[in-house]
Image (cartoon, rainbow, N blue to C red; front, side, top):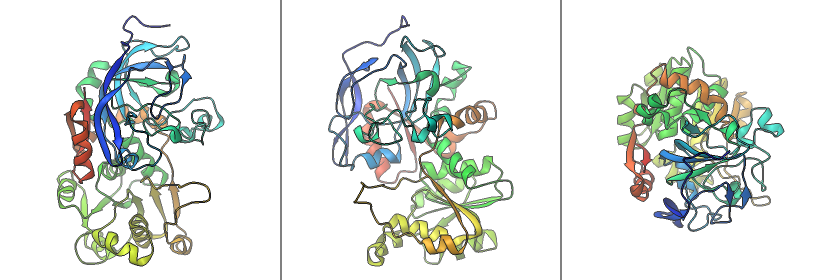
Length: 400
């Protein structure tokens, strides 16, 4: 069934890939239930889909990775975080209706394959012909689905994928909080839960960007006794302290274990969460040591997690291609000798949205303040990318 408030056809404003390391404002086709081939988009008929008018869409660290991905196509719409209003529904959609205010998980999931039935929506087998797992706005290698940094977007398998807010007015009022429910809050929560964070846990989070802050917030939600966030950016660390977490200044001299001991009284933690937080020293020394800066950060985490502890890796690392897999130089001997449990991979975001939306809207969990959600017009999306790449301590929320 198609609703009366169907989206217009033609073109729309969107943040698009403008070439290596460049996002820019441009025009893109309006979404339709039958998609045609476009930059980064594969043609499909999607009677199970809906069209969503954007209320808020965000800039993510993964979007910055897309800007230097060799598979990115000039002109493709970027972005994978969306909160919006349903304006059109396909004939096979039964649960979702026109006018619903919804949050869209960043995973594109069919809800029908073995992985989706097992809750592994980050590795859906039905939405990406290239490999298990699909994400909006990252090109054909990630399934060929258009991104969300636009005025309107297509969301397939809507009955399964969409989280519909019971109180649309409340969702609009808390827009900067609920905008985090599609990606970074579930990602931080998944990392913390997978690593076994529980009441009394001590945690070190590497990286004070939005995902690092969301991970710290999730640890607090799960009852961690102490959370220390490490970074080398002074502005980010100041914000971390302002929202109540301890910090480790990675730009300062001294070993990470000693910095943790100053806060915790012991040089180790129960859990380490790697949100791609590498110190200046790691960046400078990594080449000489024959490892990547990210691996240096991960190895530092392995060094401070207690024997029998756990490490979660929500930060994104390139898988490379078969036969050309990147060598990171991770300290596997440390993982083995300390019996550390390691969890990683794309977050199955949809499975966490019900609980996290309740925590935000009924429990008053202010995730927007913690990640410093900052509203900015969609037309200034390219500037938001530049500020994010420069290390701004903000999570930019684009609003048409």
